[in-house]
Figure 1 (cartoon, rainbow, N blue to C red):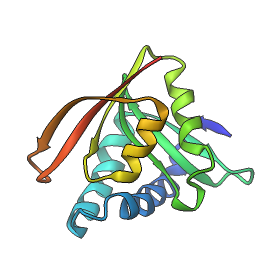
Figure 2 (cartoon, rainbow, N blue to C red; figure 1 turned 120 degrees about the vertical axis):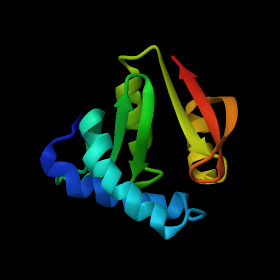
Figure 3 (cartoon, helix red, strand yellow; figure 1 turned 120 degrees about the horizontal axis):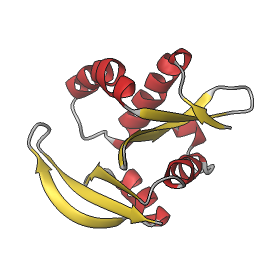
Figure 4 (tube, helix red, strand yellow; figure 1 turned 90 degrees about the vertical axis):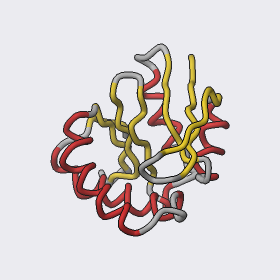
Length: 142
């Protein structure tokens, strides 16, 4: 089921983010994950429109956080990947928007394959000065 995020989902969403990040962002240092987890909880989730995908027994399988047309985050629990959860989340948020844009680390092969299969196209490449890794700017138009 796809539904809006509630405060009761916070720990589950952070758990999905952490498990999926360790797989997709294995090239990032551990300190990044500790700092980012706190920022997600304190800054990003309150500012974003977040949608969750749940299992039949209401466990969070994935989530997407939007800031206008910007996909601030989309993560699917590694145990639920390749089941259509990510596609369902993007379908849900793209239905009410003319386009979607996002940044993905160039080294994140998992994410890049997913976005390419969905139909995103690279529109820019830039260095993330804070992290020191290259990112690709992607765009999807319905």
